[in-house]
Image (cartoon, rainbow, N blue to C red; front, side, top):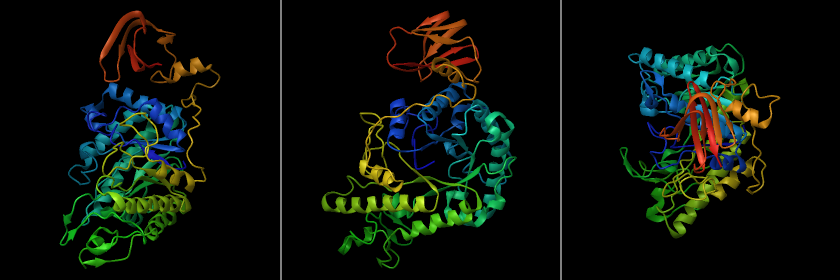
Length: 459
């Protein structure tokens, strides 16, 4: 799985994947992720806001499939999850909601897993995102969380096909490393019908004051955002409050933030899970780039520390055999974590080549040069022995079974009515038996005929 990146603030946006400033993930963007050296991609995904009475809208399943197909065709290990989406699961680790959430978890994963049951082992499913536990009651809340995870495992396995052996990802309580190691040892992971197909997910934004905090907070003392990481390039004078490791309660600088903390945390995951046969992903990590917040020499000082932070994190993850997956929202302004460009042109170009090259170097890769990629078309069972055109048609039909709907050049042909939609679900054309594609602009479209659906890529 190498190292990975998230398609953040996109498919997980409640109700609308473009609602937080990103375009629908293009093929150019996904291919660029692979060309940049990433081996793994994580798709945070909303489902509850795209469902009615527990039934996921068909149009949304189709849209998610477009993204999954692009990731799989690029040769990426692809992780598809159920994200926050209003907190219907992650904010309800309690006895009162346990039965209701379990029923919804089972319904959604049965539908998702059925839809993708024939995809090969490079597609992974992840039960949740950051299930929230409290300091006072996290042990009992974790017991309820494990009920939700068991429902997930059972629902996926019951759909058959490749889901009988697909790798499934289980999130620790609050995706906290310390809490996960304490209360979900390997012996307490969900029971599975097949051995060695579970992974554990935690996240790493440590310390929060450095990685994510943007505004001062009153926590019994006024705590300032911290901009400067490491033992060098630290601020002096009154600006010392912005050093990572400053103790606001003592009113003095404490121990500077160094990679020792990463070694300790990732080492715990290695000892408690990896060494016991359960792989681990760091499903999200990152630190805000304070461009625009800081200027001049202060920004240069911050930037050097941030690069050192990413460099050490990647090397520590590699040493401890956990898979680091960077958080990336596409945002390009103040406090961004973006590596691959999505909100400006050219789509899919590298936005932060220094961070990318540090990530590549940790895994033995030279500095980034885009040499392109080779697409992989046989990621759905049943295409072996087909011509490339036959395999393309086969894998783009929902259910992965041969049907009468097919494309012949600039025509779509079917035995019955056919409709063509854009990716927002707007009907563009309809006809009987045959539909012309002439005059359409470049892009991705969806053709439907009865229960058959096909993606149509106009280049």
